[in-house]
Image 1 (spheres, helix red, strand yellow):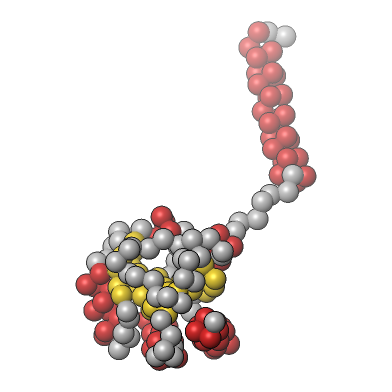
Image 2 (cartoon, one colour; image 1 turned 45 degrees about the vertical axis):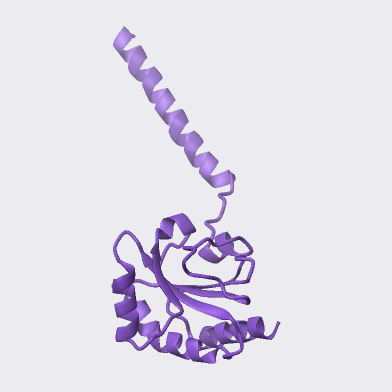
Length: 172
């Protein structure tokens, strides 16, 4: 056997060991499941711009983008949600857009175009606050801890769940 054949054989053996080892590792070592936005945010503080004051009962924060079709489809629900808050309840309703692509003025215009009134509008880096898509609706308590997270275009039953959560906040 020549020296070249020996080197090639050793290389093939190393490559085969790596391929077989990788396959065995993937098969027998369980992978950590990917966490959802809700799992990452629940019961943790969500820090948003200080200019968007937290109400004494907390804050409903809607993460939206003017280019998101699901956000547009959700506007009727946001109107309903804004009206469902008792006037005596100091639970702020704010909207945040992605700072990388939009300005507060653009978000405000988008909301007004759909007749949605908010207590505050701003932009943040979605990546910095753990938001991976729009629309995402987050309910924070007065200590800024996340108490509810809903993502995507919500079904009617999920919309009712959000409204019940908001009413519960206002009763405590």
